[in-house]
Image (cartoon, rainbow, N blue to C red; front, side):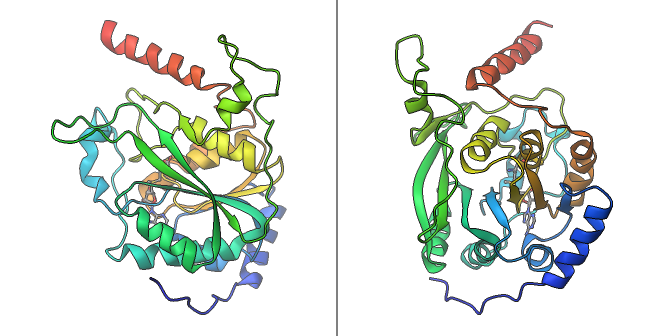
Length: 300
Ligand SMILES: C[S@@+](CC[C@H](N)C(=O)[O-])C[C@H]1O[C@@H](n2cnc3c(N)ncnc32)[C@H](O)[C@@H]1O
């Protein structure tokens, strides 16, 4: 297990300077940096300033070599995806230590993990004395086909707070008590279950960074665990999924992506995105959208 290290000094002066420039230029939602998240957080994110952190780090499984399994046309994948360093345990501890430092006392955090290095993330949660509130499962479609073992079709979503926190948890933000499905089941109860069945997005002829999470998955985290005007942060932006969802939902946003190709490609789109863009009202919306794209591919 990783030893506790000395608390990193927060560079409040640098943070204030950046905030001043950004506020003066009217870009106060646009605190997104093309750099290493650990160094960047130390430099730009003040202690206890973030309401919600969502992180989907590289999984440490050489996933950048899996291009053809993850996308139909690997020509559409942006180059430069940065893998995790070999010492996954130290890497996890170091970036999660910055999350703990920057998270408000009553903030919350979600970490996405595969199972290969999940133990290291769980160890870091313990070593940093964070509280694992829920161990959620994201059940997805299109698992990679296997014949000699079961098909993996889930990721782990760890919902974490500080100890003794009273985090924002908007339990009726998506459904109210009276909303039922067509069999009479409560939509609210289903939405709050620990297994989230959300389809992967299916993109045709679209340039992307590897391993995009569905916007609907991130949207759900943001809706339950933050309010309009709150600051949301993602240390591993990839396709900027969290950034787009946060902006659409009227949250402030800050984050990091080390890969210049991904950063440059998505920052422009992010700057043009607006409140209310790209939101999903239900998981059914994504199924319908995916089905339409599939029909196009098969029949045109
Ligand atoms: C699993 S992907 C994130 C995908 C993202 N959630 C999405 O929906 O598109 C991880 C990303 O972290 C980036 N990355 C890896 N190490 C990093 C670091 N130290 N600092 C910032 N970004 C990093 C990778 O280049 C990659 O784009």
